[in-house]
Image 1 (cartoon, one colour):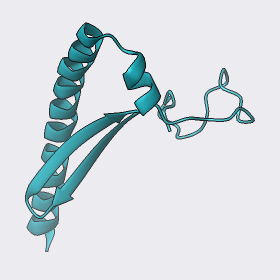
Image 2 (cartoon, rainbow, N blue to C red):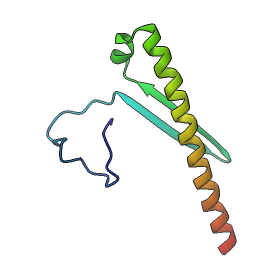
Image 3 (cartoon, helix red, strand yellow):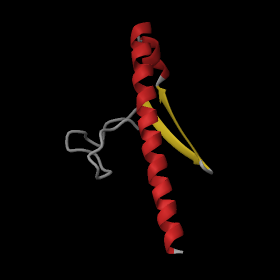
Length: 88
């Protein structure tokens, strides 16, 4: 779901839990062996409403976001593997 996160995992005080939620944007990071991939998606209705220049701008921004998130995820996994390997 597209929600603001305060780091606690729960809803923020300004977002009542009784409102219906729609996933409009997602970022997913996956790991297969040593390979980490990040991808993103946009709700089809929202995509249709964007002008071509808005779609290009969003695509550029989300490309940067997925690169940053994927790189960070990869570093964390590598560090966890090194820590686990060093203590075994």
